[in-house]
Image (cartoon, rainbow, N blue to C red; front, side):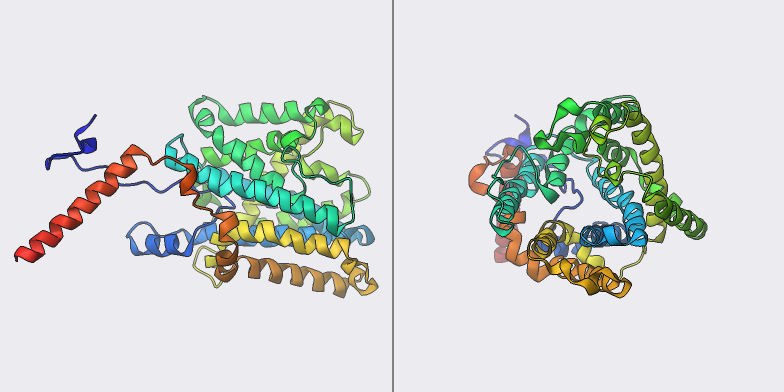
Length: 397
């Protein structure tokens, strides 16, 4: 044992400072943790990433609110296609970027379980029961092996992050990840267990995030890139409108093999590469327009997991109870109203009061379930002894 772990003695070597756990997207941060970080020099959160997470979750909520309406509007479905081509890739790239420091250290594994796996179990159960009784669907059962609706992302994030040490040690991580995604796109035998199709087909975006460095984000955060992104997005919207009657939107969900979409097997790898390129281009345009300074919504970027998991109940309630069946909602002004309402609802769901109410499900401490790490105990003991020493010195002064 090193000197720092010996139970007695006054000449111990100082313990290394506790490292902050790897964060992900969406990944909650308690207000206490945020306040602690802002007090320490060099520990401030980067406003750019919080802004990006908030804006991405708003796009996710708007996209989900468009699903019941898009069949009646070619324009709306074209916009829906463009948004779906990059909003989750942007989310996943940031998730990978903030998972770079993840290893199998006990405190990080505990955080992975309490911040990702436990919310998956709770919300998969809640969504399944909501579908069964809210939609009067007796065939819907609770199955932790078959994620329903939004919960696939939590299972995917859990698997991706567990594999992070592997991607950090291989020589060509991104080409290998693309190969895995192409394999998934031609393998309908994979089935629906754990939504592995999405896990495999979205994997390259996570691995890309692992490979990225701060300077890569700086490359797109320039005035020149913002100007260039305007014609690119305009062309994408025109292409989305053109592609509505000609292309299966299910390709953008990454949840099926080519054969399940009634396409030749060889289109699977081709579409993986094509969508990867298109998604990266539009994601770069999205990042180019994300504000770099603190905005009124910057603090909400720390609560995107809450907004992500909770807004689905509102959208599905509208679907189950016929809220989207009103004729005025299927007209341009109605579609705009639904879009604004979706943005407002998910914004509220990211706020600190909502975080406090649902923290028991999103950020359970579960100290009873884990053994204390020896280094953590030694660090606490050292801090306690330093405090006692300071108190003795003050008493003797």
